[in-house]
Image (tube, rainbow, N blue to C red; front, side, top):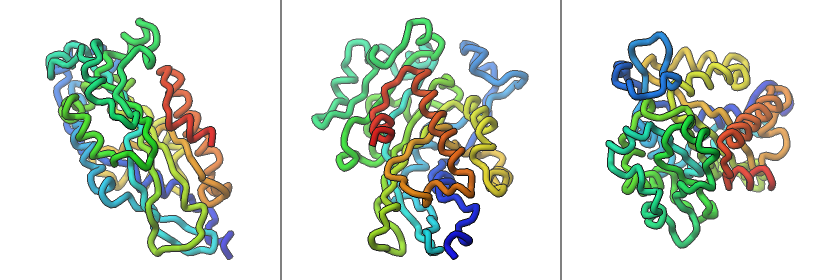
Length: 308
């Protein structure tokens, strides 16, 4: 019976596992970051573990071209591989001002709007580092220097895939490719919008397979480690989390989402009450909402997802 075959199974976790990027990490001496706020660096360690942003974006090359496949167990017990294309929905990168300035000389580019004007396109998406997305001066200083931010405004049908978009933005903001995670403050994050494109084998009139997702990921490794510890319980089911972590390479880290929003995820195909999905999806939604509120960010895709 369908209810028996799906008992305890979570298509939501299957999606999360299939779309979570894993990046190779390396270590640098802590003295390399003397100008940084000590709160940003791990306590009691002489080295700092980090990953290169370029390596993170490279994880999306194949997904951007062909889609990321997630196994979905249907109500009748059949399985399909549903493919999703990732799109850069939002990103904020905070650094120390001195490092951002010395890296490429563009630290003040946003003040006169030159970079903004170059990156605005006729369809409406834009890089925006204006005060609309900034809180008080004190709060801003605690976050670090806002090197770059982007919020997508274009319809999903008019967006380039994530890797293509990042490569375009990096032409003006090379730090997108050259920074490593240890150079970013804990306020740095990104959101990826995942839209379905096809499934194998093909099925007709499977309405639930039209679901889309919005995932939120930290770009700062120390904070990412904290998020993994605090969300391990909400992301685990039948030992799946512990298995994925034990099999993970020692020099690799998976950037599991700390937040999530869904669109058209109807019925219990995506929220199976027998798997703990109800609590999990509420926890991840609250994580996204809390994060955006803390940073005083108006995230267009998030507003659309939760109001439709």
